[in-house]
Image 1 (tube, rainbow, N blue to C red):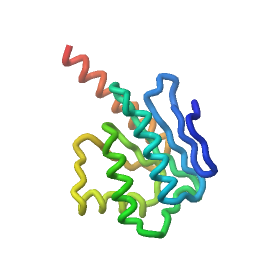
Image 2: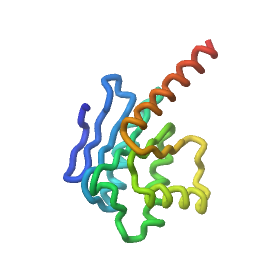
Image 3: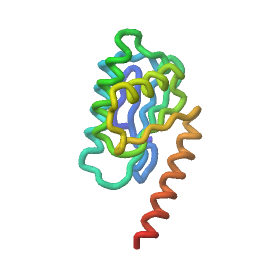
Length: 146
């Protein structure tokens, strides 16, 4: 992995040499402000890129814990920033509580979702297989258009 940013609780970098999969590993407790900074960093990386890219948020150990304060409001704020990214975002090994909060916020705040597709899987391995499937579909679609 080509590391772009590392802190006391997360690591962000390109998973593959082609720089199509951005992986954020969250391995220690985090705050809402740290999450916001990480997502802003990721969105800024993708801003000038027009080819398909994929993001995996991989939660490990204590990184799965959701901060207690104002979760609903903060997840809404994070989703608003995340919506600037167009593509597939895979949550690997996130807590069921995190997944439920995200789904609830999207449904109740009517966040536009046409450009951002969220997926929840149990492991990094499953996330990588899912992204490989998306890549194959993109290739097949581009072959049909030619």
